[in-house]
Amino acid sequence: MKSMHQCPKDEFLCTIAVIFNAARWLGVPKRGGNTAMCLSVVILFMLLGLEFTAIWKLIRAFGGWAVVKGSTTARLSGAIFYGNALFSHLLSWKFISSWEDLSLHWTKIEIAEVIRLPQDVQIKKRMTIVTCFVATCALLEHVLSMMAATGLNCPPAEYFQQYILSSHGFLIHKWEYNLWIAVPIFFLSKVATILWNFQDLMIILISMGLTSRYHRLNSCVKRVIKSEKRKGKQGKFGTEKYAEVQTWRRLREAYVRQAELVRRVDGNLGALILLSNLNNLYFICLQLFLGINNEQGPPINRIYYFLSLSWLIFRACSVVLVAADIHTHSRSALPLLHACPCNVYNVEISRLKTQLTYDFVAIKGMGLFALDRKLLLEVAAVILKYELVLIQFDK
Image (cartoon, rainbow, N blue to C red):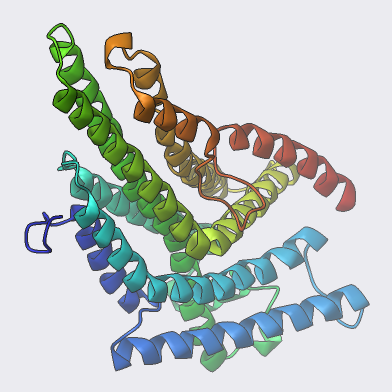
């Protein structure tokens, strides 16, 4: 067995640790550090107070105790947006706090591998590109949302008030406007937007790390089969056959450890996956509904609507597709095993084929659904049905 000092540095674990450490200054909670912890607690209580206020005003609107402008669907969106931020904050806190144990388990698996797996030298670069891309697109989308909320002709002196009243009309009216109220709302709107994008980014990055390990295992299987095919024409003695069987046994055990790692990560990430997919599904439906009901408007609003909807769909699809790669790569070695020549076939290869065929490995939304590629078609059908319900309900 390799010692800790002999194990090569895992680029994925190092990169994700840097991202988690940097994210705590954006309002995403991180265990350790009094300043960051205090900031997280303050944001949590502020989100809790804002969400209770939004729900209370929604109840007053439904009960007819207050006059609120906008459709029924528009009244719900604000409460759901900040409700997602509140739960995302709590679930992100829980997951990042558990990441120390998960990363330790991840490192132990790397050390325990008797088979020398090829290193994924590009994982850090891919993670950095994805993080920068998500941050850039989220920033551009949010800037456009601020421009669309006030219009391009808003006087600079009135911009802040106009933005708050336009984007948070479900929460504050013109006669209730006060700078001491507007500034915290403005701050929390940015935090909620960051949390929304960060929860999807976190799922994507963790999925990339798990997929990378499966890719390395599959590459090792391919390399072993190629080596055995090359030696297959030569006669083999008992010790050589025994060594081959032991190699395949170690590979099979590596796949067992990898499947256990996926399930352990899924146990901590499942609630965040469920929240992310439900929230993305609702806001895709909402954006489509608002686009159908508001065909006319200033050019900046139409540009924002198109780009916002495109970014939301792209991000939601990316979460599903990148996470679905875990399930796809968990079975990628099967064609290689089926193509094994008879002269290299042994009992451990047979066991590995059975294991990969019948062991369903995927990350799930708290066991309610698995993230695989067919989920996209199911979600598309749900969006179509829900859109018809929204149109009928909002009449």
